[in-house]
Image (cartoon, rainbow, N blue to C red; front, side):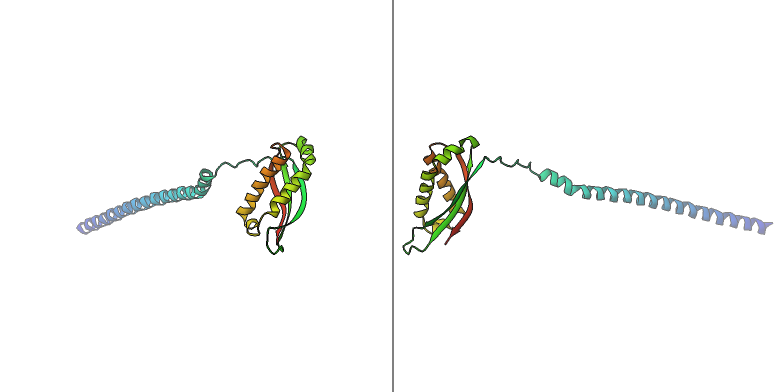
Amino acid sequence: MLIQERMADKDKAEDEEKGGKSKILLIVLGVLGVIVVAGGSAAGAVALTLANAPAAAAEEEAEPVDEPRQMGPLMEIPAMVVNLDDPTGSHFIRAAFQFELADAEQQPQVESHLVPVRSEILLHLSGMSVEECMGRENRQALLDELLVLVNEQIGAEIVTNIYFTALVVQ
């Protein structure tokens, strides 16, 4: 019987050792499961944050879009060819314009003053050198000067802007 008791004790000890190992294994697997689930949740949260970050940043950085400026009625001024102020007399400018008017009802007033307006433009252009006609800044300055001259000839601030529709300097 002694042998049987020893065998029973040995079996019991082995069972307890296996049970202990099983409990440890279950605890380790449970902890790993929690880590995997937590890690997956964290990865999902990071992925969502990164996916939404560019959109959120774009919304924050986006400035309100200004509405396009409402243009007034346009009036075409046919092309003019003028010799530039050049000692050789070989340079000229060809320019055509559109006048933007404050109000369409004022177009007849501009048309009635078109001869002195065109004359003033021709005189102004003929006094310019080739260098004064070159470059964006010089051309914008020319349009600004012409706007003042045109409104002086009309006698009122009817023309609100002048645009080049053709421009050649040679």
